[in-house]
Length: 225
Length: 244
Image (tube, rainbow over all chains, first blue to last red):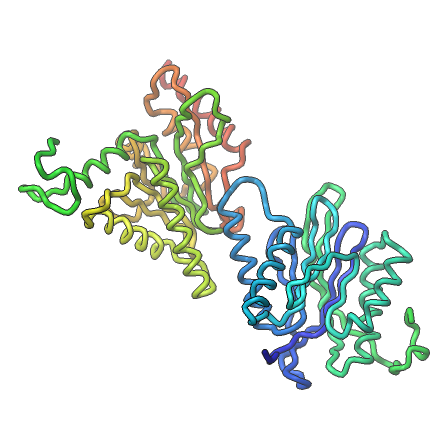
């Protein structure tokens, strides 16, 4: 169960009317930077996004499975669609089933979306453990970046999108300065609900981390920690 | 058409070279609610008339126009349960193609696969033929429209009708300007054709329509209620004027 093309950290945070995700636009092979500019947030339904860190081919497979489920749901044509919560559950079943076959998808999946007009954010790991939380960090980000997200969310649970984006970029910067496989180009994507109740996925945005005059010491940069 | 000794099975020809069960299946579809398909310059419209069995049924709760994938829909006339079986099979085929090739199945290929499937039911002794005619409409780079009968004959059309009103409806369809017709116009024309069919007095019936249009990004959808209602109102007015 070796990972050949691994995707790095994904960070996610809820804000007042949506969920924002940040991921590094790179795929590594071991410690070698292998594929660049890869966007790995996929929209699987009008209200749901998924992304992941881990083996990229496994992620493509799971994306296909979820999209297949969405098309099957579309064919019912009954004005009802599978919610992100349900997709999170379905993804959990997929992951848990594979784990029990001793052939796990080496992934940490992140499911984000708008469920019953509220932001939803959840993850599943390669053992099939589902977690639903206000903030999410995968890979090494779970150790380094997540505390920043937790602190930011605790301080302000009603962030605007811009505030949320700043928190994510700050956390990613801290991460980039420590993670030897980090990459300064980020994909910021998300999904939100507007005042009229219309759910829309945000156009994904390329952000470059400003690394000038910054060093790996937390004291030398103007960051949350 | 009398059956004689050869009408109980699809495995034996009659003396004059016919397979009666297949012809009977065609008859079953000729007694069922009419369905129409119209190929337009910006999409495909599928329409049908439904006859709810009881006033107690929720309006529009039985559906014959069904999506097969994002860009393909079918409508069947005949035994409704057979129709659902056919659309289920079509979905499996479309899904399997997408799994293998990561792109949408060409409509012609799907129609071909369905046709081969229908053919099996006209050949093997333990089967009865499928009791529906099916119209397959979709988009695979351009709008496509096919019609398939229980005898497994498959043809591509600009406009097609199946079911009990098919003769009248096909005559009406022949008048349409297929080189210029848009989906919005086709919905109105389809409503007129269906309203123009003879309906028994007091019998409840309703129209159902689905389309695949450029405006909706070539994704199948049920024709939105306001558009359908406007088309029905126009058809009713047209009918009153015609009969006046």
